[in-house]
Image 1: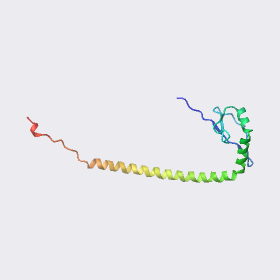
Image 2: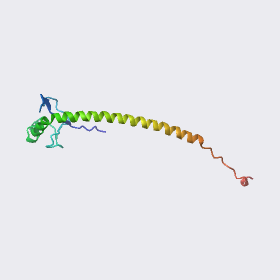
Image 3: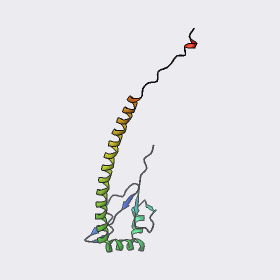
Image 4: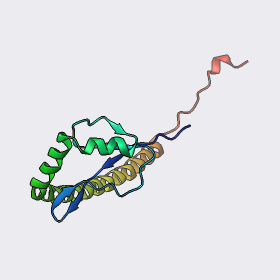
Length: 129
């Protein structure tokens, strides 16, 4: 069975509040995908192709939008953190409830089994020789 390699997702650097492209990293073997939505399904397999991509108007507009909305992204990130913590609490509570229900079900099944009386086999006396 082969392991599938998934391309990394490119994240621009935040340099003093302004998003900029910085390609000072080792190029990933599976390639790189950019979330700028100009070509969302495109995987860039070489640094040269990606450098050509980041020079496009669409990519530049995306960087500007990130910079303009940085406060919104921060507040959204905080809200998502709170939501995540609440969901973790809910999952823990539901998991505990499920474990309790399993214990109760097992106890009831055991009680039902012990209450059942075994059916005795009867013998037809007419068949005796």
